[in-house]
Length: 601
Image 1 (cartoon, one colour):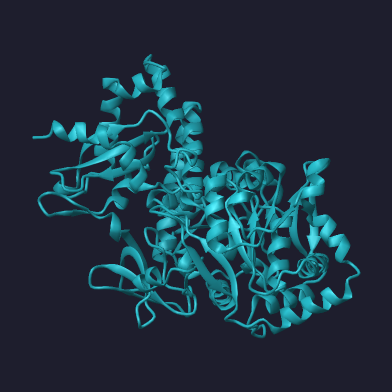
Image 2 (tube, rainbow, N blue to C red):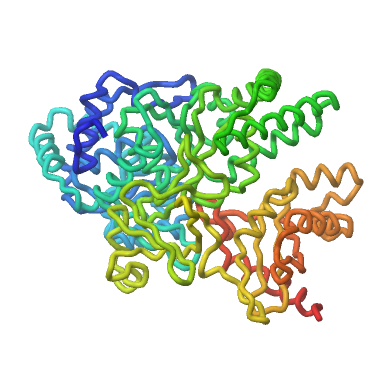
């Protein structure tokens, strides 16, 4: 990199604040219009809030939780805590009070910054169960009795404006920060058991940011749309620290209901998201085409054919030819520019992470001129291990390892990684730490994968999720599940069959698509009756067989169980990042699955 090296995120933030002083750093919507904050103005506010934390008696190393949606104050709190040497504990705003209480107790958090009255209510409910919690601060300003109980960030900033001693202490703490200082405790989503606090340092993140920039080539002219929760390590690195380090701008989304308009209003050049977003967008596009006039459908499918030809040429680094190029130009004018406009018209690429992306989805969007770069990593790896590049990508893989990151495949197929990006361990869990970090520094990811001759990594499954059939054959559920979710009619799929003769799948329908189909076929509207209807069962049997034709005979899904409701976070079947809690789901449907197997010869 051409810029001088910095050894901590405090130093990186100070450098960016000076170098890009008058440039836009953050953009947020106040309910009426988009508002902008420059790097230097933001830095002044961070210094005030950081000095307020010092004045409140928070020493370096104390833990401060953040319970909030993505917003300007989230970033203020994070950078202010970092500047004062305080360790942040980010929490998903969707978490129920009981799970928040567990993390607050486990981390020993002395304080928490909440966004709204609704989040403050959760803390009121559990405060007596969190003996270390002494301080509650709100991002919103409350009125009445609650205003006397909970201080606001605005009050803290205002009160610290002239506190020279605290301001001086902040400067001293920030300048004395070291690469090995703990920056944050990020609690894993907990797909199995209680979440564990992952200890990450300045150097963990900084090494990942620097290598990520080399792979993704971000510049100060880039604009990020921040949609994923900032409490998730993927967004924290890719949509928070990385753009700050490079002098780019970040716009905060207000959530899914606003996202379509925000993409057009913000016109981002880069956006990170999870596969479900891209799959839903693809479904919406295809659904709109299905209901379009026949002529428009023909034009769309013709254009997609030209797009797929161009996509293959780009991937093969081959010449498209003048006739094919002319056809693609027509397709771009008739169809693709409209799709590109729906994501703002300036997008260089999306980045996908957090779960496997269906290859068919990546190929669909690339044919339409929208590139999705899939990457791979974990909370324990800060998070990026590998990612596809803008000019070097391979669909169906998660790309080559980024610089400074070692990857190898163990004898049993497990992906191992080593480097500065690897966590320091699990908070207060030495045995669990030793179980995943071997003496040579290799982190055992628990994922199974393959490296092709060019170094591109492909994820083949999750080690602990392997299903062993009664005949001794192993079935990796994830590739099958990802294939099934390519169906318009399938929202989620969970493959099962451990110790059984054959594999089965629990299917969660995409109810909007299924219910539209039901109306056309005059089927029952009640969901329980609908999923039990013979024609619906036949539909899903056909979809499963259509989408998994190349499976080995022992891998084929022989048994189907169709759920009559969606999985939700509230029901405990999804994590806050919308990953399926496999163990909880299979336990909830255990009796129905057992009944199905009782009828298998």
